[in-house]
Image (cartoon, rainbow, N blue to C red; front, side, top):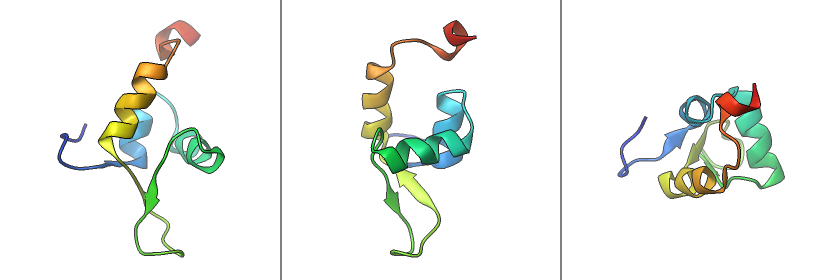
Length: 68
């Protein structure tokens, strides 16, 4: 997990929510979570602000363990 002075990578967000990096990228594409790209328009790497991860955690209704 990152500290609150840096932003999360897609794999770090996936680990926080016990899901795949592909799921996190889908969340970004549909607007469920806000992120920005590194390297401009053609950049492939996303970063997710820590505050956005905290917001999503507070909105999370069912823990990944309960979903199984």
